[in-house]
Structures are given as structure tokens and as C-alpha cells.
Length: 264
Image (cartoon, rainbow, N blue to C red; front, side):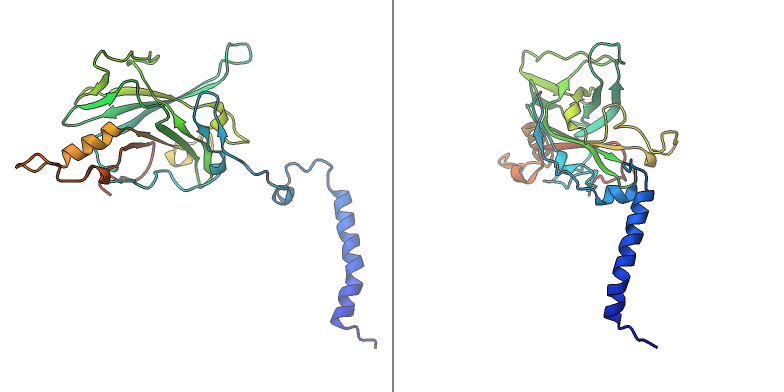
């Protein structure tokens, strides 16, 4: 009986293995674009952040990253309930192949206060808005942008822009929310998605909110920090704020669906 060492067995087996792999490759269809194996082995193009035509930056480096939806607070008061930024609706429109223009994606929001008026410079600070849209089930971001600008609008389905008041400030009063629109540019949508399917649930026929995307919007304004500082109270003797303003966040955050995080 001839003994074949382990090393010799490997050398003998190598040509057979090569032939088997070659035969298997000949039996595979020419179009393997949908093959999971090929998708895993194919080189993945590196995505880069890119400027958007109307201002702002598409954060394509965050595509498929699942680190949300709510960003980590960058100061006190950010997870409080006064003031608050509320997401009221998502509006995706398709003019169709014969209609004018291109598909659009607009996020409708409202700024709400409970006790004291909030005064915001008019127009709102340019580039003060970020938008992140996360797919369900750990899919990560489907769209992401920073440096967008919100537009103050009148109420109603077709919100018209509001002209800057003579005072130079928008007034948010208790019981009278300030309505905002944020347009999400097509360039902020991650590769493989479109303006029309970026908000689709998975499965599309679901009745479970957990199967649908989550939208997170932030808006930063110095007036928000001033409002939170004032609400923290003042020393009765000299009127000096009892809290340092720099400790407070200047950012409002709206998330479409998440556990209750107020006060944390």
C-alpha cells in the first residue's frame, strides 16, 4: 500500500479542485449581477460627501450606516420638551414622465413652545438643518444631508413661504406653532435608491411602523440656546443667568419614530 502524505494529498487534490471550480463556473449564467456571492466579492465603490446644487452637503459617506436615529445631545435641554421640533408630514411627489419637473421630497415640520415666546431671526439661519433617513430593520441611512435651510411657510397643504416680518424676527408663541418646510435634494439620496422609493416601507404593504423608514431632522439656531438658558432661571439679586449659556444646546431635533427619550 502506498502512503500519501498530507502535503502530497494537497498537491494531488489541487488540480481536481481547479477542474471542479472551472466546471462550476461554466454552468453559471452569464448575468450574475443578482448573485449574492458576486455582490459580496465585487469591489465596493468608495462614496464621498458631495456639495449639493442648492447649498449644503450630501453625506454619502454615511450611506447604510446605522448609528441613529437621534444624534447624541451636544448640550443641556436638547431632549427637553420646550421648545420642540415636530415632524408633521413627509411629502414625496412624482410629476410622472409627462409632467413638468422632477420628483420632490419635502419634510414638513413645526416648532412648538409651551410657556414663553421664541424669537428666531428672519430669514432662518442658512445651512442650519440636517436630514437623515434610516431604512427599517438595521438597513442604515437611505439619505443624508447637512447644511440645508428651512423655509417658514403658511399653514395648509400647499404651504407658501412667509415673508420676513418687519421686526426681523419670526415669533413662535404658545398655541401658535411656526411651520417649516425642508426640501431634500435628490443628490442626498444614497446610490441604489430614488426620490420615490426612499420612504417606502419593507414590506410595502405593512401596517407596522417598525417596517418603515425613520426620519431625523435637526435645526440649529442661537435663539434656541438663549431660550433654554432663560428657562433655566436667573439669580433674583442681579439677574445673572444661573446657568452658563454654553452648557445648553442650540439644536432642535425631530425624530419620526423612537422610544420616549425626553429628559434623558
